[in-house]
Image: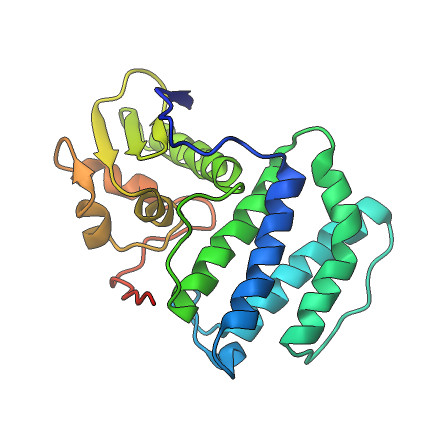
Amino acid sequence: MTIVEPQPSRPSRAPADAAYRQVRRATAELLAEGPPGAGALPVAHCPDWTVDRLVAHLVEVCARVHGRVTGSVPDATPDAGLPELLAEWGRLSGPVEEFLAGPDSMDGHILVMDAFTHELDLRQALGVAPPVDHPALPVALGVLLRGLSAALDGHGLPPLAVQTEHGRAVAGTGEPAVTVAGPWHEVYLSLAGRRSAAQIRSLRWSADPGRWLPAFTWGPFRVPESPVATSVR
């Protein structure tokens, strides 16, 4: 996977610790500004989850990494509300962000990608537009492009050029045979299993995308059967 032709609007890549910290802060801000009872809202991109469960997941992942880097497994916080979950996330995050500030690692980048993807899920649940850019975007998108690259190679498919307002990347090995383009958040959500085949087709393709669609299912991500409706305030 190769990044080429960056655009002037492309966000500069922030250190992984700063990217993760911004996701945590943005999550707290979004919930502080959200409606009463936001914790009970459904999360369309994660079936059977509510906002409470989404934030609990973020804390659980942080706790696992905290335990791995410190050797001390934090106590569970069953049935905690959103204020308690956010406080616990802040308490656990120090050693985790120190780990992220160290040498780049795929585990660290996956942690950032997971957190940022769920920030986008939270925004959708709250009806809040995606940010124009975000310090976590370059790291998170890099993970998704690597996954797409492996999926393309695994399916024996030609490379795919991916174009957004922030730049152009080539997923797969070799010269791209087709280009897909669209707003960064639509491309990102397509790569992260949050857009249906019809929605992926609605991006701007330079050729019929049919043969490339199987590669959008990879790792933990599955193309949903039905489009997910979005609302933005």
